[in-house]
Structures are given as structure tokens and as C-alpha cells.
Image 1: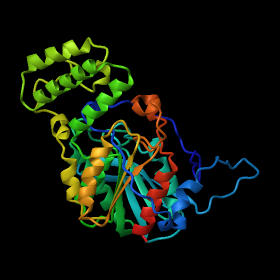
Image 2: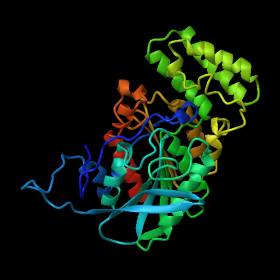
Image 3: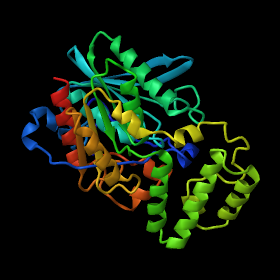
Length: 386
């Protein structure tokens, strides 16, 4: 368990499954290439050194953490949207590198366990990190449901600009980190920030969200024991719904198909709206635009050093096909590093039945814990922000 270096962290979960996840590719993952142990510096161990039992001031053996970490509430804006989070920095030093963290679709709050390793590990390495509530969540204003990826990435760009104005931050060493859907957003934000120093994408697939969710739903239904025919019926219904969003099919026919689907036991696992939730105008909302998002086009446009990490045991993302596309691209991008981590799932945890769960209890516990993930990322960062 990672510990807070200056005070205990609140690990209570405030999240609930977001209806937007029915169509967004929140879950995505990993790829592995040979890990060069000798390339790591001492700083690479910073994440792991915090993985001890917590001590408290009341304990007679308690010692003051060195280096210390400071945290402060951080406010900034993107247009009319007020965004709020926490900035974690080393207690001392200036000309600091910094990371802007972007969210998985079902993990919108800055204090969720999924991001704790950043808050506790990066400042120990001498790197500041800003983790903020996604628009429409927590203390941040705005609306998530109607937001397209470009808007969400724009919030990341605004965060970068806000950090660049701080006296202790080196504006030439600010980059982006994102997990799952946040991996897509991190790449987009880096592409829209010419001065960005780097980008780290964790568990983000290189297929469209629609394709990714077909992959995930197939695995989800298989894991729950549904037959091949039942899985085909679920995927076919997803395609009927997707066709409607693209103007191919009537509202009446699509609503009727969804009503029939709702009577099937597999429907809750299909990530589709009910007939009652189906919009009568498919042009409204962000679902259609986000469903067709071209992640590979964004990756092709990367001009900064990039690290892509996937889990070998990720049921939510087609890791193998994503890695093949990245390998071809990396031949002409020497600053692109690719990893698939053995024994890691979508959130860089050891695989378990919970790897295919999306519920408040599971989301409240998701926190990276696979050692190779920490060491790969910290080692790569140490080389790119020195």
C-alpha cells in the first residue's frame, strides 16, 4: 500500500459508474518490450520506496519523510469552465518538471486511489503533479456528458498553461500522463501544446471506442458464461444502436430492438442505452463523435517523447493489435517507447475477477500495484526530465 508522505490520504470512493461509459472507451491497455534494468537510475525506485506501511505522528517511532511533499488546492479555468484539483510538489527546490494527469472515464475525481501513486511518487522524484477533477465532477464545473474528447483534452492544455505560469515550475519540462480514456486525452493535449515535454499513455487502445467496447463486451460476456450465440446477439444489438447514431436506421426500429434486448439477461453487460434512454435525435450529445474517435491518427501526430504502457492481462483493450500498430509507427519515431507488462490488467493491478467489474466498490479500490509499471515509468521520466 502506498502511503501519504505528509498526512494520511482519504481513500473513500466518491465515484459511481458514469452512463457515458456505455459508449466511451474507458478501459484499454498494455504492451511489453524488453525492459532495460541498467537504464534505471536511483530515482527509478522512488515509487517503490513509498510502498510501506503508514506511520502516524502519534507513533513514537514516526519520522519526518524526506524528501517532503507539499500539496495545495489548485484552481484554473478553460473558458467558462472552472477546474479544481490538487497540486503536489516537492517541499523544496525550483525549476521543477511537472505532470498533468488526465482521467479514465469512470475515475473522474482527483483523489481517487487510481491516481495516488502519482501524488505520492512523483514529488519524491522531484517532479510536481497536478491532478484535478474532470469537468462536471467533484469541484469542477461544466458538463461531462456532452463533452467531446477535444474539449476534455483542452482542459489538460489549460492545466499545462496554468502550471507554466508558476515560478517553481520549469515550463520546458511539463508533460501529460493519462490512463485508459485519459491516455487518449493525454496524447491529444500534447499534440495541442507545442511546448509539451512528453506524454505517457497507459492502457489506451489504438482502435475506435466503438471497436474497443465490442472487444470488451465480448470478453465480459464470455467471462460471465454466456454462449457464443448470446454474445453475437449482444454485439449485433450494439451495431444496430451504433448504426442509428450514424443515421442508418430509424428511431422506432432501434428503440424496438433495444426493448427486445432489455429482456435478455446479458443486456446489463452490453454498454448500451435502454429504449427509454435512446435520444430521438442522434445528432445530439457527444456519443456519436466520441464513438468514432481515431486514436491512431492522434498518435501519428505526436512530436514529443512518448511512453505507451499496456497490461498483458487487460480484458478491456485489444492490446496485441494496438501494439502491432504502435510498433510500425515507432520505427520512425525514436522517442517512442512501448511496453506490455506481464501480470498487469487495465489499471496496472494483478488480474482478477475484478478486472471485468465496473462498480463503485471496484472503482474505489483500483490503484496500480504491479512493480514493473512503477519502475518503467519512473525510469523513463528520470531520463526525459533531467
